[in-house]
Length: 244
Image (cartoon, rainbow, N blue to C red; front, top):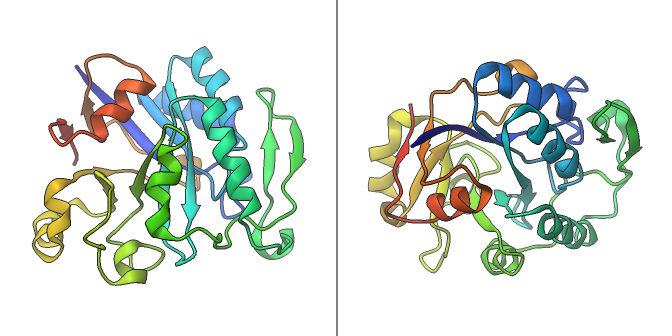
């Protein structure tokens, strides 16, 4: 069965995200638009994942714990996990690898942990949009150790992507799925980067504002609507993925 997805949405925990991107608003907007599956992937943190999970259960939207990790090379990588426990363990590890630079809310924006009733629990003092001390070539195994999968983010973007920052895809890479922004250049991307021939490609909104969350136009073919099935599917070369 086909299920619509958007696996790259930012909440108010990301300093570049809108303060209106509360977990309740994100899940509510996803439900209103008719999305079946979402992942909130804030910069270098899974801090709002549990709140998103609880709201997803209430709204009937499947939510996947996630993060947009920034590597030492300033490459953005989506990291998706099967459950909150593994996501939070990885989040704690990543936090220990952040540069010790405090956030300046006036310059960068607020970084807010929020509960289901839109109460601000706390704010993150360290700036989350900085690079971490985690090399790109170590991400796959680190994430796998927490039962997750890695997806290089917006690889066709002119900044903070594997192609823009590293110039190529290392041939010894281990990822099986990559995210693209513009679906009209898939053939060109594959021609110029042979590694992508073995990968699934997905596209997401990378929404920092509620109105930018994707419409239900991209789909995964799943045997069941579960987090485990989503991760297995997008990490499987035989997957059926429909992107517009």
